[in-house]
Image (cartoon, rainbow, N blue to C red; front, side, top):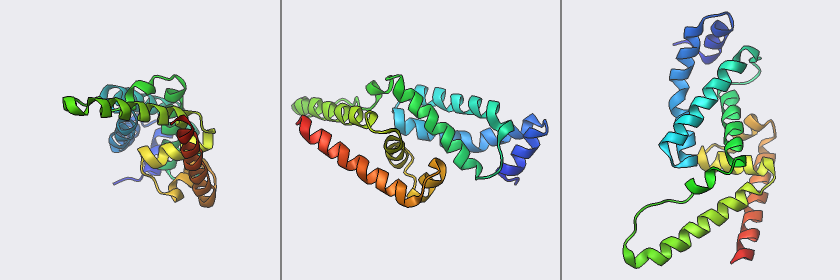
Length: 175
């Protein structure tokens, strides 16, 4: 099996079928990332397609300085941030599951809490927001997050810690 870097080199030399192999190899994980993030299969599919369209346009500039997956995560993160900025995501961050009538009040409270929490996540500084998203939606270890964001592993941990503390503080003020 060819490595990602070999496929990229072939693509950069004009072999478009090598790009198709990259897509087949990584599309499912990209889709899963966005499905966790949006909770909507159609939006997850659209966002994953956007990622691979952006990848197609920029892959000729790939410099082989990092793993391809780090490059792909970066594109996914930028796409997720664009999705957040458009504020379309808000309606997807609470679960619309039908509950028993007795738990209706609890469902409303839980939805409000989740919406409020994700509103606060959107207000975090960019690096903190990106670390939180990568830890929650992709369940990435700090080492991977640090490589993708170009920060130290300690910095990734500190950003996560500060983000959690800010969220706790902001969330407790609203209650």
